[in-house]
Length: 192
Ligand code: GDP
Ligand code: MG
Image 1 (cartoon, rainbow, N blue to C red):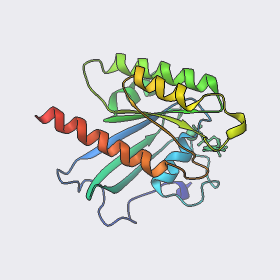
Image 2: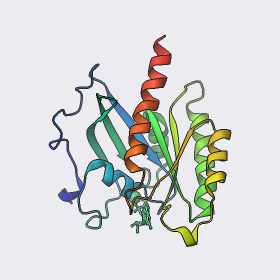
Image 3: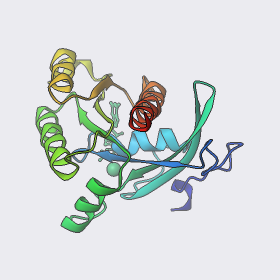
Image 4: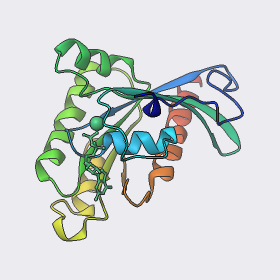
């Protein structure tokens, strides 16, 4: 179990040492099996991704983006249990959201839209950064959702879009860096 729990001991600066001492809470949403935990473990720097089957984890890490450290607390807890309470908490706690679907699973794509609507309802007046992620882009032959469908959906839902492959580690770094930039952008515009 312990092998799954990451901390920030491998980074020079640990949580809370962002320039303003702020830790950004980022929540992963999406149907089961789309790759949330795989993406989270890459973010958390967990080496042996096949070694753990955790259903609820948070990862605490600082990453450097544009020459500035950002402290992120990433929540992979959406499926930890099925309680309505947990779902509501998830919708409430995030400073930013990553909504994941699998490009090989149309229904997970439809579910992503539902989650986007739920999120909008829960946080009506807030302008929270959301990134729509089409994962498993390596599975070319079983693709059911095209890149165009993904990006069109992101336009409709006013969020960013990226395709990733957790298996190949493709675009995963871009995803988390992009997320930090989104958080900073919205934060700056709020302060003006
Ligand atoms: P979760 O239920 O959303 O947390 O999804 P998991 O991270 O547990 O992944 C579900 C399954 O999909 C696992 O067998 C992963 O190895 C596999 N998987 C996750 N990401 C990818 C990917 O980018 N490509 C491929 N081919 N398989 C993936
Ligand atoms: Mg999982």
